[in-house]
Every structure is written in C-alpha cells, then in structure tokens.
Amino acid sequence: MTSTGFVQSPSKNARIPAVNIVSPRHVDSWTHTRGGDPRGFIDATRLRELWIHTGTACNLACPFCLEGSRPGDTRIPAITLEELRPFIHEAVDMGVEQFSFTGGEPFVIRDFVNILDYASRHKPCFVLTNGTRVLMQRAHQILPLLDNPFSVSFRISLDYPDAVRHDAGRGEGSFAESLQSIRWLHEQGFKVSVARQMEADENSGAIEAQYRDVFHQHDIPQAVAFTAFPDFGVPGTEDGSPEVTENCMEKYPTTQSREHFMCTHTRMLINTERGVRVYACTLVDDDPDYDLGGTLAESMETRIMLRHHRCFSCYRFGASCSAPV
Image (cartoon, rainbow, N blue to C red; front, top):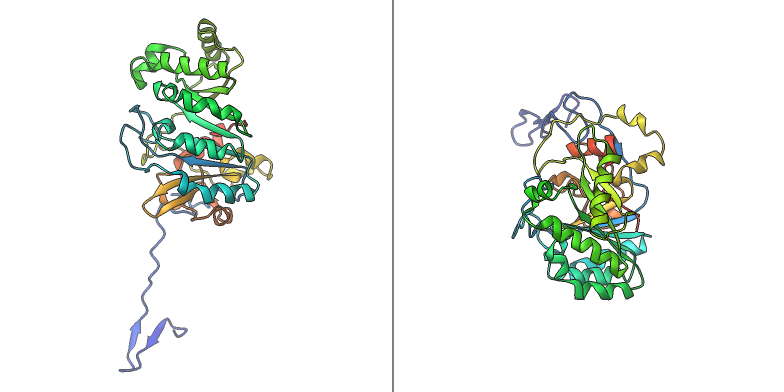
C-alpha cells in the first residue's frame, strides 16, 4: 500500500481505491459509551473464586429471573463433571479459594451432587439455590458432603418475608418449602444464608427484622446472613442504567477498592455449543463479548470493559453474588 492509500495492480497498473474493512465504531462499543466517552474497565488481580453455571434449566419459572430460567430451558445447557474436571484443577493450580455454583436451579441437574462432591474435595463450595423440594429430594445425597475435606454452604432465595408476595413470583408453596430447607440444612450443620430482593429506598433493618420474626416462628437461627439484590432484568434487556466511564472509576482509585467488582477476582464457566467457556462474571452471560476464552489463565489476561447494564449495579451497590464460606 502506498502513502496515498492506493494499491498498484500488477496486471493493469491501475490505481484501485483502498477499502476500509474496519466497521465504524458502534454507538455502544466495547471501549466507548454511547456518548463517546472512554468506558470504565477492570483489570483482574488473581482468581479467588470460580463460579460454575449449572445451566438455565430450573423447576420454577420466575418472571423476574435474571437468567430467564424455567423448566427445560437450554439457553445455557447443563454442565457435567467430566467437562469441569480440567477447570477445577486449573483453578486449584492458580490458587482459587472457593468454587461457587449458580443456575437455573443446580439441584435439577442430574450430575450436580457429583460435581459438588468432587469440587468440595478440593476447595470450599458455595451453592445458590431456590431451596424448594428439589433440594430436599436430594437430602440423602447432600448429607455425606459434610464428611468432605472442605465445607459446602448454601444461599437460598427468599424474596420477601411474606409468603403471599414471595409465592406470587415463585409459585404457591415455595416459601414454605424454602423455609423447610433452610431449617433442615442448619440442623444438619451446613452454613446457610438468604438472598432477598432489594427495594427502592428500603429500610434494610426493618425488612430484615421481619425476616427474623419469620425465622423465629420456624425455629431458624436469627443469625442468618442476608444478601439483597436489585432487579437485574431478564437476559438481553437494557434497563437504561447510566454507563460507567473512566471518570466514574475515580470513585475506586486503588486496586483494593476495585475488589468491589467481582470481575477483579472471579470468573464463571458456562457450557456453550463451542464447549465450556470462561465468562467475566455471573451477570453477563447474555453478552458473548464477555466470553474470555477457553482457559482460566487466558481469561485473567483480558481487560473487562464495564459495558453491560448490570455493571452499573455493581458500581452503585456492590451487588456481588459472592460470599465467603
């Protein structure tokens, strides 16, 4: 190519205009906001927690589900122990501290307890579950996990401290089933916490006091910890959240303060038609641009641009799915 931007044809010595093969920047690109400002970004530190997505199949069909899960759903297919083994060992070699599991509903996956058994022989494990009867149906398989070298803990979704309101989204009787699971897990010696819905301008103390009243009525310890989640929207939606720019990230100027963001220290495995892939975190699996590769080591080298609308929830609330076990 010449300095004028034209190429010489060896056959006819004709000047042919060079073609720009790079598409113009999309208004919502990876690196810049719609307004053209540089996006905020995260560079990973080290892998402390590996999330494993068991698939979007679920026994419930909650209309607000951030994964769009329902019975038989295959947007993200189920994952098997054989597919996971190499990633578990790679993560251990990288110094991972915890394996965490989400869905869908993990306990509808036939291989899940085998996966949990294998993982908890290597590191502590943490399971997000709706805690309905699908968990109690596996009680005989879950109990032996107490004998494994590392602990298994659970976070059960209990959206509101009101059975009617909770069941309106998750189905009649689900509130009672989840309370039964919380009580049973605690009685067996497992650590249990609760995920609840965050409400606008809420009085967190008053809401959690209502939960503790319910727990008292059902012989559940008052010390159960809570994690409150905002409404993340269903997959593929855009909620109009503000975009996170480089200037916004001045709020988190140090490496330590950026631990606020899951993508500094976590990755998530999901099954795809191309095999198991590594995604940036638990909230962005509906955007293929957050596919960081086929190995954990490779994924930690990629800069994460805070483009997904759910990134703003992390920025504003610290809405981390993580919890120490």
